[in-house]
Length: 146
Length: 218
Image 1: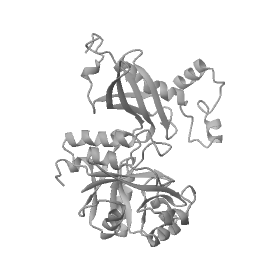
Image 2: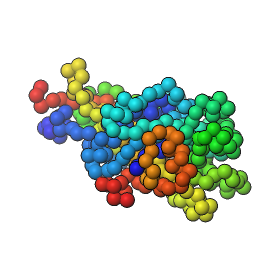
Image 3: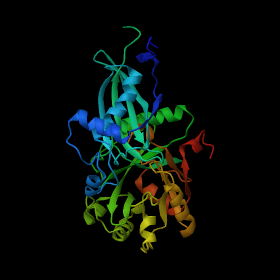
Image 4: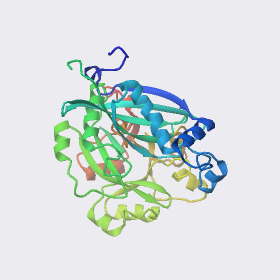
């Protein structure tokens, strides 16, 4: 492992688990995210009545916020700049103020064009096992020989 | 033999796993001591006549069969033994297929259609039965689904107990590492889609979770 406890490519094996990262997106965090993002409020992410008009059970997390939370797991593990690609499918609306479990599994490792690539499945689930967001991620890690 | 009867490759719009990634992951499972013999690709609202996975199957020693998962008025149905006649008679892309007509047409063409994840809250067969619908042609349902939320497989199990249905197992994988989370344990040796239909009609199978296949210990 590196000094920052981040993995070298040679340390990674198929089936390695990354995480889990446990998160709760509180109402005020979603409002703060929308402010930074520049999304005019109120909107379906911050307001129950507007969410209801969109047939949502309540205000939901913006997709890009879910992506940000999932990216956090991978960048904490692989280090800044490691994440090359994140390809997600949004299967269900992600609620506020509920436990979110984010975990990844290494499904492939390969060296390609001089890069040490690690491919992962990544999933955000709820407390009852709801599969909110899932997909794949590609990371580039340093090698011990470099 | 252990077959995952419900999986989706990138041929389905909501999956991110290639068939090659699935068969590679099965090698990981085998190294861990799990016994997995094959998978059935049940792509959403289609049947991939033109896709040939025989080379991958031979290279990795994994049986790869093809089926479909269709949207109907009463939830999703898994269809095994799909052939040209069935796809000529039914529009697989129709998201409001009549479930009873689907089961009847499948039977007429030597195929078999069974309800997928019947315990799923809101869209599973159990909900429709609670609303008064009845389905005389249902004898087998997917009892173990790897994508189920807490309580949904239990609802499917209760349905099987109440109605005397047989149950299958499938992962409903959309990601490589989810393949074979649940499988079906067959008495028969299955080599192709017709064998699969016959094995299901024989009733000699049961659903199991992946951990129960450790060294074939079931």
